[in-house]
Amino acid sequence: MTWNTMWSFFLIALLGVTVSQAQPRITGLSGNLDEGASVILGGSGFGVKSTSAPMKFENFEGSAAGSYIGSEGYWSLRTDNTDSRKPTYSNEFSRSANSPQTAKFPLETLHDYAIKSGLDFSSGRIYYDYWVRFTWASSTVRHQIKLARLGSGTSDSYIYPHFVTEHWIGGSNCYSDARTGAICGASGMTDWDYDCPPVGEWSHIQISIDYGTASGNDAFYEIWQDGVYKGGDSGFSWFCGTDPTFQQVWVGGYLGNTDQDGMTTTIYYDDVYFDDTWARVEIGDDSDYNSCTHREIQIPSSWSSGAIEVTMNLGTYQTGDTAYLFITDSEGNVNSEGYAITVGQSETANIPPSITVLEPTAQSSISTLIEWVELAGSASDEGSLAEVRWNNAQGDSGIALNSSGNWSSWSVPVIDLVPGENVITMTAEDEFGLTNIDVITVIYDLGPPGMPGQPVNEVRTE
Image (cartoon, rainbow, N blue to C red):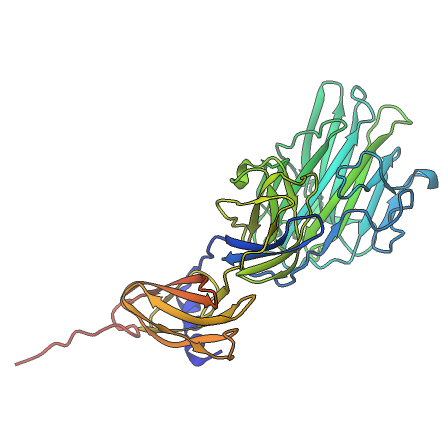
């Protein structure tokens, strides 16, 4: 980092400036839109994902049907069932021909879970996505069912805090809630508008969590069911003394508070996905993300602000279906209009190049008290880049310095600023003339009188 950018960062800290991130924008893709195929998405504003792949995508295809969950070495079991009733890989009630196996949890006692412990969610953000299918124990006998959980601790028993969705079924009552756990001895239960999953149908659950800070009641979570936003809760804390952050993911269920013995509730799971960031790629059935009622998570293998490579996970989409691609960045921003695709189609058009402003910030705006700014960043293309150029909407422009020889690293040592907003557009152009941009707004703030960069009016005496 140069002295100039170091000084800019100092000014950000000094002024307490809030920087914002641009919305993702998809401009093209390359690859076959088939199950398991690799596809590259091009565009801008995709943001940062420190580890491209998710922490886990589990479609339960790794072991033969009938074998126990955990036989593959990833999951461990916590079950009160006998051997013949432990969770297994199953081809009953397949959700998709693309991925016919599921995980079967034949609950007839308290616990029936597959658990992964020792996970690192220290980023403070979690995205948890799964499909679930029920056959209820009884629609008339009152009982309680807890679904997938997030827990604390490193063993296969959980300690507080934890997060769980649960249902009370029976008679005329059917309601749901989410529990944050017994925080500092309190119950910490929070209600939300989650619908009891329909009997015998697959339902899609998406959960976003912000763990908050240890010093404030600023944690929150949000939940979607089959694409419909169901709310959540905010303004609380998961921290209590030395309690750790979440370190476990539980898949399965709990059956309790029954009024008679011998009841069984069978639960099936498919396409379980979790990560320590909200950044993700999905396909949906509507051009507006919030209007989608059918979404399928995609599996990223590389991620930059202008290019993402994913392995296609079609779920129940079939060849010829129209779907729309969505990218959600690490801050939860999603492209306002989905990128239309036809499932099974091959797209081989050249993808526009990728370009990213990294210094003095990767965000979309910054304030400074200095009358000039230095920019630096990266650019890439499937082929060759011709140039990287800049333009200040206030009237100046030029060609960036090719710091690396192939434009993978570029810089602009000095761009003069005028007071107020300077909208600076960085453009990368490839050998075919295709272009892509990244925009940063630099606000030149004159500041109060006497601050650095502030012009001083001379007072003359005769």
